[in-house]
Length: 68
Image 1 (cartoon, rainbow, N blue to C red):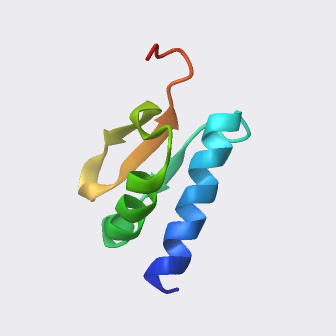
Image 2: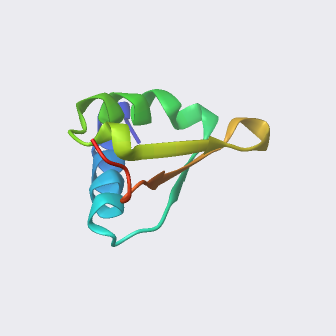
């Protein structure tokens, strides 16, 4: 899949995190640049929190309790 397509998928995943439709998703190292593109354009990106795992994987969730 091309980077643009992946970025659109990640934008959708982040929207689902925000709505509560999804609890978390994982970004593989090879896909990080596509994720980063979508992340930088996501309005509530400061609430998307990632936790690094082994082998460069990052698990993201939405912090619904964070105050701005």
